Image (cartoon, rainbow, N blue to C red):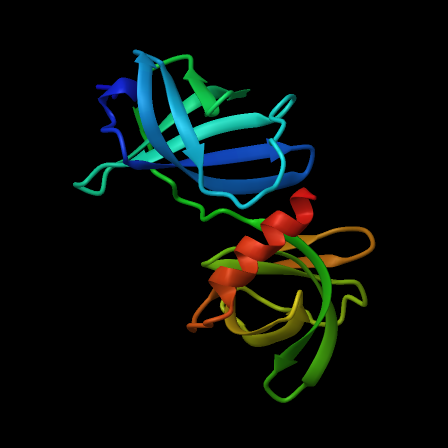
Length: 202
């Protein structure tokens, strides 16, 4: 059973999931007023001195109930209005199991530390709150699933020091790609992901 947009109480926070080309961005927004069953006036929780343009931007809406149940509305449209933004959805929200955390592209050099092998230069491809992937262009790591390593890199003023376990291996013609789950807590990770999303979106 779905949830109507108008059933979300005013003042509640929703999450806008935005995609354009290869860039992704998450923005929180607050429901200010319901205009119709599927149309609401919202306020973006986003610092900007200009009106944002959502043309040709794939938009989805996510809302988590007080019971912790996530719902998603897709597709959605956002247009600017005199006193904020108008959000319009096509259907009721459906229960959503967000198995994969939001990934953001990185494309930054890093060092991978492997027990007994020292530091290896790698390219960090993407990252989320639960995992990251790296490109091994020299193809000399020869990891197997379950192998562990530590990744260190700096970007946008943040220092990331992550321990990971290999869960995915993809062999290509010119590189090997390894996907890791993150096994430690890194205080810079959440703010870095937010900053990187905004940087990529620009």
